[in-house]
Image (cartoon, rainbow over all chains, first blue to last red):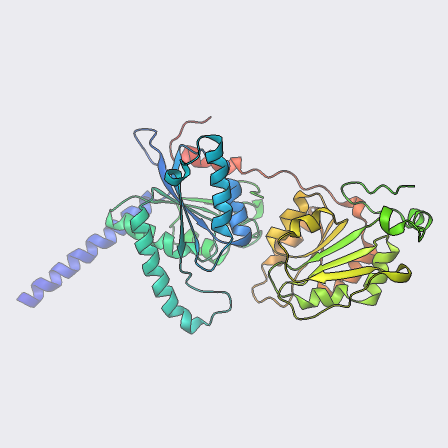
Length: 223
Length: 198
């Protein structure tokens, strides 16, 4: 009898979880009905190299008081990206008043799930570690929005953001801009976010891509 | 007498080249540099291709005087040349914080297919030949180079077709790359998050 009760509890809990996931997936991509013009805490994932350059071109034209504060995250092995973001943020604080940058922008590093050339076997362990780190960081930052454009560094963070949506801790919208380097096919990160319906807004930079992936928005080139 | 090289680095015609480039003032007045960059990658096939005598002779014939190669993490070391008796001056280095300066002073850039290098060169308005690394496993890089070549913003080549590409190139047919448009994403984001339009 007791065993049957346990089964009923497990069954109903998993049903609830599935219903909740379905509900979150349904809400994903719907515009937020927010009451006020509250600023959105923004987590910006810098993907290194060309990805970072594209992202900072975008961040440079975002409304500074609406997407505020901004928290930049880059891979621990990437020395350049946070420095470039810092230069951008410093140019803002010079315009207003020096010292305000400390509140407006934060800079953090995250472990990557897989380095270029790493074997697939060892990447199982590093992926789990990166996932835990991403969960922890996303929990500390608790952003309203995650802004990313690949490569793989952003996937654990997006998964973490989705889990927080499901659990109900916070609704973290995911905005993904596919890299300009992708003309005909989505990147693996882009494909995962698109297929699993994780991104609330999905942008591509070439018209050919928009034709193949109709839910994406074509926005022209960021570079 | 001056040979004017406009800021897009358009080549002087071979005629102008042979008339204007007396040994006495050639290197001072009309230094025309070809800058080769592989970024942070290892791309020996490209360095090897530009190191060929045939290719260097073709560059010289087209009026270029200097060849500067950024080697990155590659292990192939090209031959240096001080450019005596009218040959091409060849120099190289592995990494440098002033890549942008080298690009700015170049008349022609030959680059690997990384999007960073591509757009940096296009923004400077320099003629660009992108060489796709065929040895890379996940070769999505060729997509971007081919698309931009189709739109005539650059020339796209492979290590073994680079010589041919230089032989047949007409830099006057290249079209300047249009300004980027990050505002389009920003506008859609504003709309999605319920911010008023500016």
